[in-house]
Image (tube, rainbow, N blue to C red):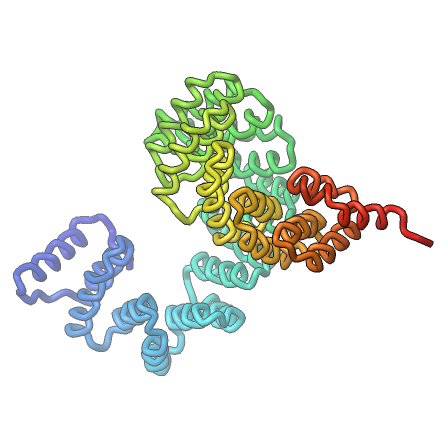
Length: 466
């Protein structure tokens, strides 16, 4: 049913679009409508596909193929009950039409009834002349069920039927990777390569498996074979660059990444990695140049902004680091990595109120690392916000219930607030968890550490009376 690029089908499409523009009515046979609809669906022109389906059914109201396209539209619009009802009507008329089973399975899949979908697809498999598509659909259903062994089996069946089905090959490797069967993946790919020695995709995938297993020499050889098979294969150059980086062969990695810049529009990933390699080689100006190109190419790539920010932090130029992390936050204010850096940089610049905002934002966005809670607490103490510090520490204790670092801070803050009973309670807790962490009191609360009561409690803990 796919629209072939011959003159007849191009003529049908031109006539159809002319009909829409002029409001004339032209006659098309049902196959022509099918080709037109298929073309629009393939090209993502859903509204035109719907118009063609509607007009097609007006001219051919009994066409099962056009009704199946209508079902496809209903499913696309999530009108599953309507689609199901129409399929039931079609099933009464044509019980041996595999497309009815496939669309029924599609509906079941959308309703997460994957086992039932597989049952229907197996019936479709018995009826179809095009096994590959149905085998692939069954494989996908097993992927949804996270049954990777069965998924792998069906995708392998796809490859047996069509060795050029690279989407099936990628899915097979995905299953192997999820099952951590990297050696088995390599064996499978080597068998495949024995029959298809110039398949760049297979060489690329076998290289990735060797890379995971840290067999970097074999990985590099595989990526080189992928490049020999297709010297414009960007993925192979990128993966080769990544392996060369791991081997600390930064100049060669730069060469590999640089090739990709001339093959297509520069990718932000390649620009970032070239920058990182120059950074490792101490080529600061070049590193900065490529980091800047990276964020210009893709302002949404957080790794680019983080690389520039960290670059300036390493140079202790915190004002420039703050300038770039501010720009990043203006683009994506929900990025927790940005807010953590914003907080730490402001802390370095002694801009404590801004630093507190940064840590609070990081916590709101789900960064519940102990360091984040503690640093925010220490800043709140510097700002004299003792009640807020207590609240922050209690929130932290929900995640870290036996943390001496939290307990000693609570003790210190409660002594500042002159709530001695609570202070004593948390001091004893802290001594119970990690007695050597009394350093926290000494550093953060020197006046508290010198208190006679505190000295006595610490002494009593160290030398309990028998």
